Length: 298
Ligand code: HMG
Ligand code: MG
Image 1: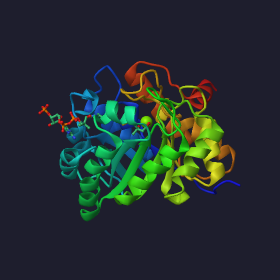
Image 2: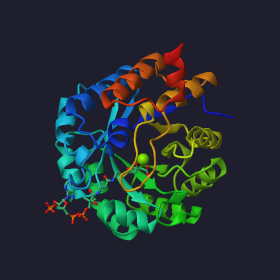
Image 3: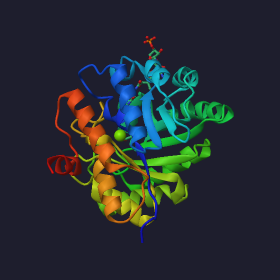
Image 4: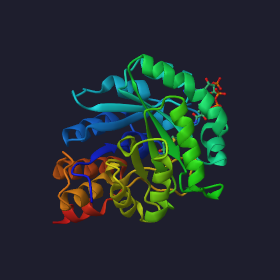
């Protein structure tokens, strides 16, 4: 059985653009968010408050957040790896902050420059401060099936990280396949591992499409009862600390699949396809969404 309704969080302004080498003006990022919300997205990951030396593309976080015309009912999320990031984000009033850890030690070191245990120590005061400020808290868990530096990651590591996230008060978690190496049964094992600490209503699927598995993996997550799905319009993206990894599953492809299955998303596929075509044109590249290509060719 499948859920009747699926909630999609579009991560393109953040995950989609963070690794983009050419400068993307803040005005373009702002318009991307506006187009996504007009297409019916109710959760959008807007930016991150990380070191501009590490991720220059997200250095305009304040400008982007300040430029948003917010819609009631839309949740605007931002990444905050430490208190410095959280304090910077607080001024911009996000609805949700995201602490981001990894199920692999090597990726934790490369991505956020600390061990898994240290990351939890850094996240704890961020989570506490966010909850006190009435801001929701999500925990992204990277490398839940494979790591670019360590190879296969066993489900036990995911369960361990989910338990640590739970212990510091993180309200919901993402099971992320950062480098897109997962296949359906493997991502199901990772989700089940997270489900030892979080109920399925509080687990999101975050799959990258490097090996063309992200849509199949998304379906596998739905089969377990997960109904929060992350995707990136036009399939934009990649993580700077996961070499060769491509973007997330394309939002258009997920919506096409779900609507074809009779599952409600609240999203207008035509408006979404237009948004993907628009941002792809801004970046001067073809969309990675198969559904968008087919629909635009009709
Ligand atoms: P660090 O060097 O260990 O931090 O970096 P530090 O506390 O020692 O500070 C060093 C410098 O960074 C100082 O500046 C700080 O002020 C500054 P300096 O004195 O050298 O000029 N700094 C900051 N600046 C802005 N905002 C901050 C901040 N913190 C310190 N919050 C840090 C630690 C986490 C900051 C660094 O490693 C970093 O920025 N990493 C980037 C991580 C990142 O954005 N990765 C991509 C997102 S995660 C992802 O894509 C995966 C995901 O999609 C799920 C999936 O697919 O797996 C979520
Ligand atoms: Mg990602």
